[in-house]
Image (tube, rainbow, N blue to C red; front, side):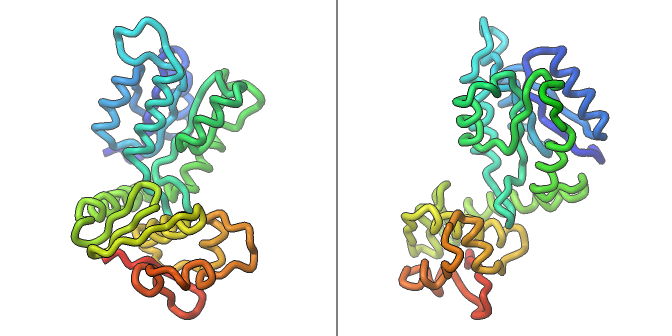
Amino acid sequence: MSERHVALIVEDEPEMAAEIGDLLRALGHDYVHAETLADARALLEQGGFCYALVDLEIKADRQSIKPRVESGMSVVREIRERFPSRNANDKHLVPMLVVSGHGRDLRNVVDAFQGGIDDFILKPLSAGGQDIGGKIRRCLDMAGRTDHGACRGCRQAMATATATQVQGDDLFWHTPDYAEVRLRGEMFSFTGNVNRGVIRILHQAVLAGQPWQPGKLILSRAGSKDGEAKMRNLFGGHPCWGKLLISDRRGKYSLRIA
């Protein structure tokens, strides 16, 4: 196994892929390279990378006539579907940055962020005085991957999340958006964005080994705009209170998943 961070580069232009590779080596990172959507899917099956750099306009496969934005967006969606886990700070455990010349098209930028990317790098790489190395390091730091040694903990957290969902019929299960959560056969439904965000953030905190989180901080991360909001006001009358969502009675909260 490499002792350095490994990036997945999805880029159909050989010269651009080489330029990105040179930049990553300067950062002390290794990489694997996919030219097409089909190639990217094969590397996703193999795994083993710490973060991804994805071009939006790539070919579907080696027989494709021209590259298309739809193929790049498929890579973005499939990476996020395969690696949805977040840490206690609500950041993706597998960071993903788009590297594209389509960044001046606002619709593409919005679609990419809605698809789950963490940052956007413009082509050419020299455009706008971008600090590309800084963007990559910042995404890795936010993911908890401050160095490659920390990646082991991220892999364990993702494996735990997967194992929890596989055993969901007996223990804990949730829909991708946390609108429904089941604990030992009892179903809990959450309709509001803030409610679902709180449950998701607390779940990821448990998986990251930091189960008890301050209520006000969690509410803020979940998108609450009310600085005076309290967890009890939001969940006190909900069936999950005391069963799925538990309090230490000192302002911190956790999620019961077993």
